[in-house]
Image 1 (spheres, helix red, strand yellow):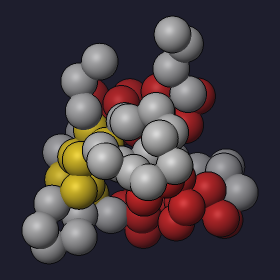
Image 2: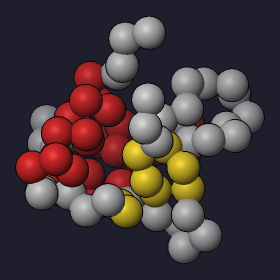
Image 3: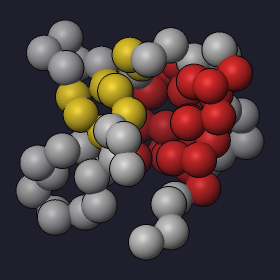
Length: 72
C-alpha cells in the first residue's frame, strides 16, 4: 500500500528533527508547509488508530491529545 504524501512529509520532518516524535496539528503546520489549512487539523484524527471511519491508521493518539506516527 502506498503511503500518503502527507504522512511521508511528517515522517521526513521527524527524521530531520523539524518535528518531535509526539506532535499536534500546529506542530505539523510549522514543520510541513504547503498543505491546505484543513489538512493539518483533519488528517490526524481521521487517520488515528481506531478511527470510526475505518481509514488507514497512520497515527496513535496520546492521552494528552498529541499524536505519534505508527510504524508501517
